[in-house]
Length: 228
Image (cartoon, rainbow, N blue to C red; front, side):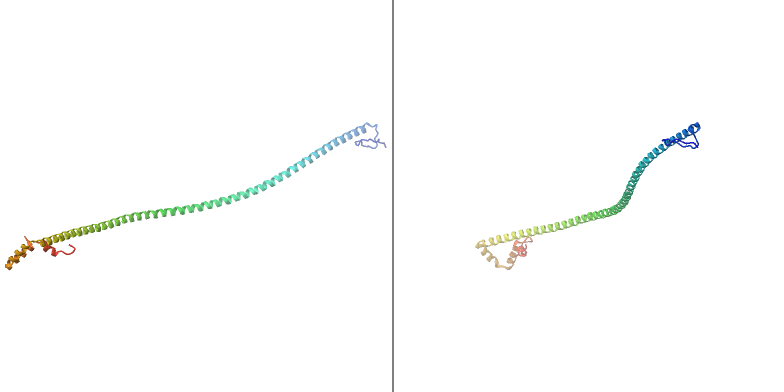
């Protein structure tokens, strides 16, 4: 059995039954050491890659967390937006209903305005008819009053004429009475001498009352009424 020397390197592999003077064993050992070194390098690379991947995983986890928070925020915003859209739709529906109600009210008002305009036209026609009738009645009343005024004027003229005639007769009577009182005394004696015959007296009285078929003023005055 051969013995192996201790080697501080961890890559040294003890191969029993070999001698350090055996070149095959030395080559095998060298190959194994090379493989071990390569594996260590690969392991270091793997560890390094694993560390990088872990760091990347942490970064991606943080990014994912941020994305999830953003997604939750977006979901909340989307929910709020949907609620706002629903509220706006309800407002639009209410506005449409209000506009429809206003349209119906406007149509009713339009119909009422048309009816009122028709009634106003009829009232205007009645007013025109009443105005014409009132004008005719006023003209008739004025004509009647004018006729009454004319009759009153005629009556006043007639009364004034009769009053003037009465005054003239009274003046004439007063003058005749005065002239009769102023006759001379010889006229009275001549009258007594002429009373010798009734026929002559009647003839004289008849001639005093009537001359040429016209009544004397004295006879006419006897037939007048107090109103002339």
